[in-house]
Image (cartoon, rainbow, N blue to C red; front, side, top):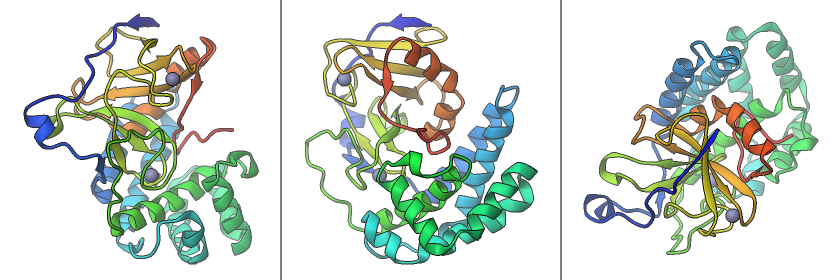
Length: 287
Ligand SMILES: [Zn+2]
Ligand SMILES: [Zn+2]
């Protein structure tokens, strides 16, 4: 692992600034499709190929459920949990996943399916509130996948809240923590957006500052490769937090959830250096 100099900061001028938006909500089916394809590519020769392929299958099923996710209604955590639609989505997700997963995973899915509605809602609520230890790790990612699909659909159906000039450490649409930040290409060339772990929104933050505390004074970029690595950990010496920065400029096929999940070895190395991750991956929820 090697430290690298800071990338250039601030808002770019020209083309990218004309396309500036404080918040982006990528088309859901397209996003899930790109994620699944990227996970399958990254699974080739990977130590955790089976898990990456399982995550790919979950993303494919999420894509297939977008038309059934419903979009209307409030996006607030409690309101969504009371609608009863989460149970419906979870049942569809389990039904479509079950034929394609290894036997031990199918067993966990059956347990999740058999839980009474109020227990499933209680578990979903615990995840929403960040109480990850309240839900068994074997079922949490599947529950999260249904919850995330529902929240992402609700957020897209509601008017985009104005998030003003302030830069947020957590998602301005739903309040969740980010997965990672992405450096974009195309008409948003060079802009940095954080990607929400729950509602799949992205929100802008200038580069070269800590996404957790905002400090720019003591940042280090750690990776296993060269300074040109696609995935680097942006580590802050002020709050000792870190989050990965994934560059689409360096690899146009990269995707926040997929590339983050395939580089968990970098998290182990960075954590061993004394930094704490300030976001999480939907397929690697905090213990
Ligand atoms: Zn969100
Ligand atoms: Zn910081």
